[in-house]
Length: 169
Image (cartoon, rainbow, N blue to C red; front, side, top):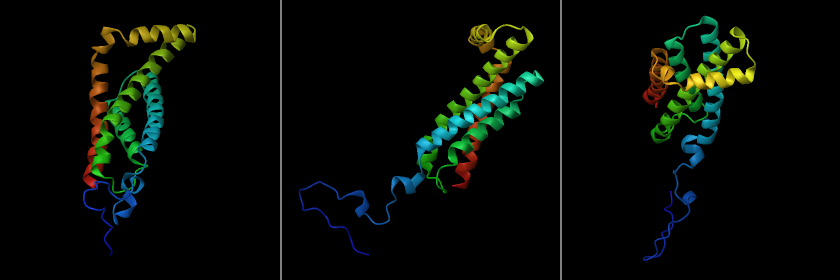
């Protein structure tokens, strides 16, 4: 194994990254974070549809489903990364996964309200969206027990998914 050539003394210019043997490139170190975020956004849409339809048809929320959606989004974001995932790469995706989980659950709640207004009260889609947005951002909804439980268990699910991955790496 030969040592890379060092620059003359007094010059602080380092040789290109590829001259250091055994140093992984960005692709080898952790995979594509952009791809992880795109897959995470796909999981957001899927989770929102599942959460919204389940809440509409059962007229209940299930905190275990919120946990599963959080775990699913975190695993979806980790899936394109090379295994084992480097801890800095893993930690850099925790906050986006939690935010994506909350976005998914909130969009699911919005879907539930829109479908309910559209089907049960029989109003046009535009009015249903308008009324549901008003109800969605009301202080009563934001302080409701269902909303708080949704947020808490969604965050727990996303954190649990990353915790499992952290244990494996």
